[in-house]
Image (tube, rainbow, N blue to C red; front, side, top):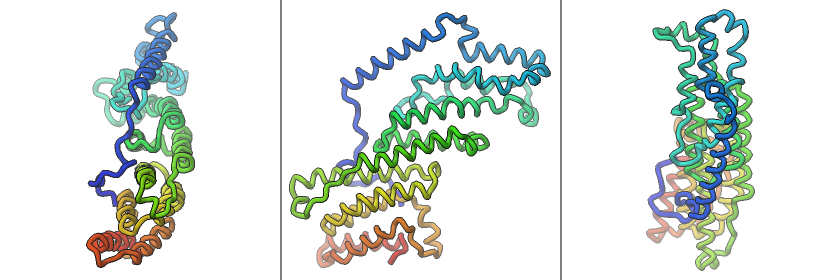
Length: 344
């Protein structure tokens, strides 16, 4: 039921916090040091043997002059292992979680490898017989996916919407452009496992919504409560952005079974009915529309992980004072939600 951003600002759901100037300076200094050290790796190697283009051109020349010997030497199997370390060095500072990061398809090594062995006038049938057809997909699997796994484990913050959307977009693009390689990829399996582990860690370790009495919520304690609740909804939205990448069963268990049912529902029970109804609308706005498409076609079975949420919606509706304008508006909100969930 995603319908864009909420018009009303909610503390805790704002854009990601930026680094302080001190942190940014330290980061730039470390980056410059790493970049400087990386230039020394092949400082004692001649140029034609320390660049992707130089090494690839040597093998391409062999392929063009003696294709039979090239295939008998199983160069196609060895080439990714030869070029992998060179590509890995080029991608040392690549971080697609950062704003403005260069897409790997625009890197010089990618241009070199995507055109490797390509002849003028090459036909589609000829390309299908190309022994090096899988060169780029293998490099992506052996170099880029492990790099992404490391970034997920060490850098990715599931509470960061910008980082999450960049990472989801990149993986969706990889799965669309390399469909034959990725489904059976062990590296992809390890990456998804790391993503799921980071999700669970965020729910277990980063979520805390204080349970206050309704009297305390009206004071200074309510500010902290509202912020923490907003952060939890933000995390829920970020987790559900992984639809299509992470298996639905796993995603629903983490996002709904753990985050929604364990934290958000407990917080809703302490809120005034009108405020609780508004918060329910925030929660439902994060749900993917297609979850409810089959229900709209006649199947009225609610998702198992949403049954507790549905029961809480009905409880809130019973507590609303419909004699007030705010109560009537909240009741209309809940009625629409229950109708969507097919749980009336």
